[in-house]
Length: 178
Image 1: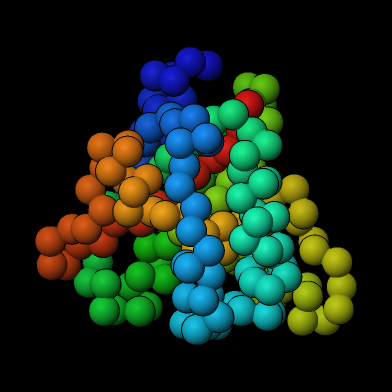
Image 2: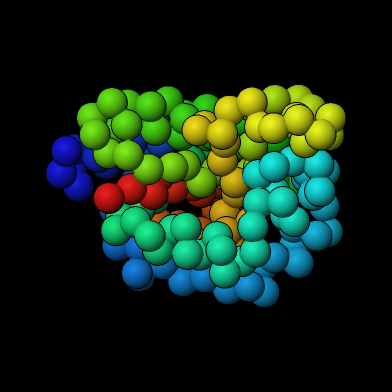
């Protein structure tokens, strides 16, 4: 698939916008990692895909940079960002679409991995809480913050809105591949 076909596949899964970018153009900033430690999502230290268990910021950046491209995925949701339950539901829809897209892209020969708009929610609770290995290591995804992606800059580079008007929320994720 070429870039136009990749974007069309993403739009077909329900994303509002999508763009292909070279991974060497993605800006990473370790200053975002402390937001994970605030544990507002409740997954810090209890999910393989989240800090501290997912890897250091340098390891996460290296994982992305080992691939050439990222398909940046945006969902614009009619959700009040202050409504935690609605935001969580919107992120679940975004991540489910990203996983469906990942499966399609892998079938087309675009091997890679997903970065979600939140930490992995494939198992509840995560197997880490029972000291067991991950049940879905090939599907597991970490969030943009765990990777320390500077999402505002990424949105600008992909000509996507980072902020929305009141009552709307922009969510981001990526599929990283060669």
